[in-house]
Image (tube, rainbow, N blue to C red; front, side):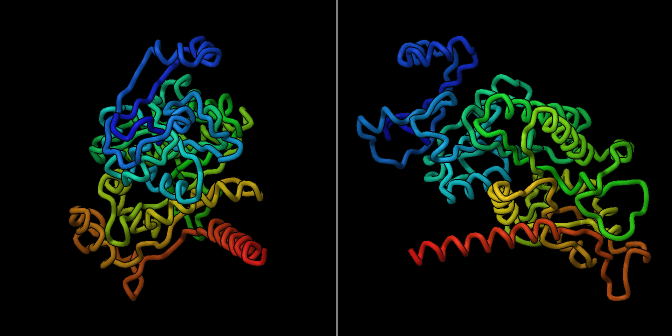
Length: 389
């Protein structure tokens, strides 16, 4: 993150008035003195003091950076205080990208983000911008000049199942619409990597047979009838994102991860797991309860973005394993303190169990597996070329 002095707090200036933005371009110093909204974010500082020349180059706001986005590939990650976003930010920084992050509530969200990212990672950020998901203009300001937008989530469900309601599902959909439109209006390159969910593909009122892949969609009415609000919100939001991206000519890819694990099975992340696992017993019975390591999900997002240069498009299921055995389900629910909610106390209907105790698998992630293989081969070729040079 751009800092002026290592002994002073970081100031992030948020300016939503477009007329003032134009004035700021004509006279930057004047506008900084009269900036309408100033947000002060305090955090531990590890960097040494900047020299005067470096100070002039560092800008901690959404409206400008002396670093050319075309050269450094500036990207924006929404909801930087979310569990997944923080891992995507980490992967992008490790890849040399210039990263801008949005949050919605500066006092609370910045503190959470500061806990998820290391101090040195916080200091590497181009800026942290307060941008409400329901405010199109603030999203435009946040995305201005970016090569891509990584939209991970519109809400951080700290209250679990009770915290993600039907109303939140509606707001999630409206936020998706705003993100795509802002990406079209303000981004330097109209690209969006949109995080959806496997939940957007597995819920229907019929007993599907065979393989469930990216061509499958959840039934919103089925989700509504069973109060599967997160599944309904993710399904509706992704559909709106696809429709809006076609209308606005935004190049979109969606990543649909399963249950996020921290860092490996059965260590699930509680805050993201509770809303995901509403209806978990039925998922287990149907053989569609899939999980993935959070770091691998983050890597998949970055690889999918980079492969857009080589034709990556559409949806990508992202999971590592399917919970197939009763003992695995019990391990998972015990870790989450959801005793009996997945396994039913060990009394699963016999029709869902094979003779060896396994549950039938019906999910396919072959599309992402092929992309990751191509990305790995491409990386190996680049490294070989560098060595040869």
